[in-house]
Image (tube, rainbow, N blue to C red; front, side, top):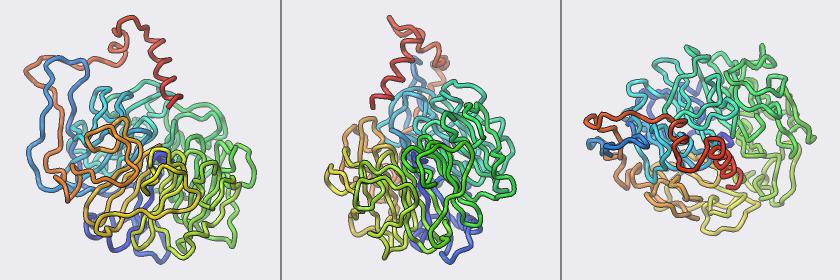
Length: 487
């Protein structure tokens, strides 16, 4: 996540086992010696997405259906939010699961889903990427050049000109027809990088995380003027800070800087992007944000981290904040190809498919079989020594895809975000059978459709909240905010 799933991948030949050849176009983004690059947030040029709608909350006569059996679906892309998860599969399938209270699953209701559930709202739109924010989700269509968003709408994070929640995907009009390279979502703000290297940002901006030179929220996308003439390769979004890498490998930071998470050597906020000084003039090729920390990878495969480290999430063997990028000595002999930052934990994949995790581990999100925090990288183990080819961190849970087309999850499972059909925490990777070759492989994903014979229509969120017995809309909203703050 972004922070909430700010996963980035530098695939080895392992990925050729299951990714479509069209993904190789993303190799054009980079000029260093690694074979090719693609991101989890940046766009996969997949031509395969099919959505299946879930039943509507409060609609009598709705019936839950199971989609007809199909051939094995390969997982092309995973993304994790605060307490929900999304996957893009081959065969025209997008699915989501976990917490749905704010509509972030896109099924038209506020229900949680304990296992991957197919969506239907974007049938035929050729979705190329899906990206989770904390409690909202975005998707980009290759066919229509539309960015869609849904979920919790406070502070304008959905980009529709208001702060309303959305329970189904809606196109962001301000981004219509733009060719998008990458989307990054933080807690309450989003950014999109165009194929021309321009950056649009929107949402909450109380610490300048939008990079627009103000602290006013933006209800619709605005171009970051500070990058005029500076082509951007990728961006990463934390809770209240943002990072970016230019086509020339330069690193920038802006927004909330209290813990040194901007990498600028102090604890001050920045309202516009500012260049980070790098030792030995290293060129950066990947950047990811956690809640209040930042991780980057150099062209030589070295891993750097900076910012908040109260839980060891920087991986330097201590719990001290770092105000500038510091190389991770524990992995200096490895070439890092993928990184992802969670709320207070970090994951990294090496060129030979090994997965390491460190940081906050209260719910087992590091995945090494215990619940103790780790201030240094710890290696995870998978059955049959499977190699990891994708990784995604949520707030308190983690997802991974292996070279054998299996998907694993671990960490917090309260809302079903692990996809195991239950609400149990796991401190070791567990197979998501519905999405894995060793399981059902997506052959029969559940899909909720409104029964045409019911003659019922969807109830709007405002109407639904208003009819809760003994509750006023305002008090209900206060409860929702309190619950988020107490998680």
